[in-house]
Image (cartoon, rainbow, N blue to C red; front, side, top):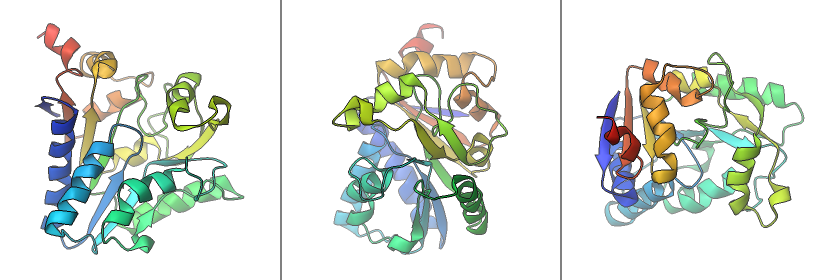
Length: 245
């Protein structure tokens, strides 16, 4: 596990974008695992800026997103489909049929979960998976207590996660209670994982991730067992771990 320190959020985002761009430029076919939420927004902004300035092509890229809210239409402003289109896809030349998110409106969600697993396998697996981390240690929507053996599945969101995500909704009561998410074992099959951590509010969970034994109460702690993980964290996020070093 490699830890890269960034001065601030923007530098963290730029470093992550450079890693993604290197992967896109170096391979003739690449599968990117993408995340949503507040943390990766800056990374996507840097990718869009690069496209505007250098026209880096994404014609050979497939993307698979970590998750989607259950019961939220693709066109809904709060869906992750909309998020990805607004922050990245509509600004680059990636073919729409090569961008993939779970269909959380499916009648049979369990069948959709299996279909998503099969899609990732058919694509040859994820070459680079971008992750954020929740204040409770979740990755994707895999909340504390999730089995490390989990595959893509339907999960119930904890109260703390729903509260955190309420800022994206006009009414906090509109925050969905469930989501479809890649499982932990699915994430761990990625060839490379890049975890972004920013802000003092994430300092304690990063400290726990790095210092405590691997355990399912801190889902992200499993990343210590992957042989190609890079953590890009800004100075605020590294505050607590620096105090003990």
